[in-house]
Amino acid sequence: MSKPTVAIIGASTDRQKYGNKSVRAHLSQGYDVYPVHPSASEIEGLTAYPSLSEVPVQNLDRISVYVPPEVGIQLLEEIHKHGAREVWFNPGSESPELLERARALGLNVIQACSIIAIGESPADHSD
Image (cartoon, rainbow, N blue to C red; front, side):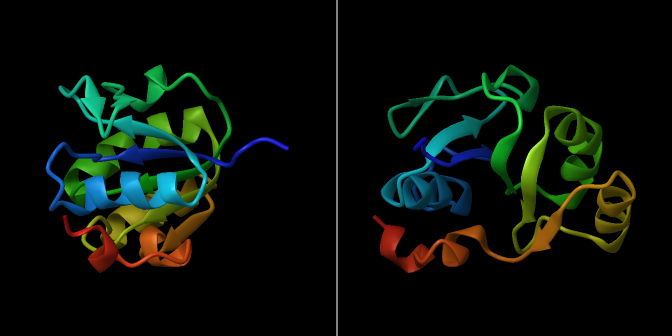
């Protein structure tokens, strides 16, 4: 059985940011994690990808978004093309316009904290 896959858009090298905490939380729950960051080459020992289109897995189980809505809305077409069973818009990454557009593209939108959804707490990853 293969591991579940997740791309984390807005992954961060800063361990205090939720985009980094999500990388660590998903790793601890057994996910194959693909951090997406425009300029980092590595995050938490993993290869970071400058864009979702460069992630080497199509049809991910999950895409988790940690960028502001004005950035995220510009990425919706790329998210749609790449494919994922679920697209998680974490608190602060959503706006009514972004959510409407994502649903219009047919994305399976989940508006919640993906860290909590996998049974972790962001507070567990504060170091």
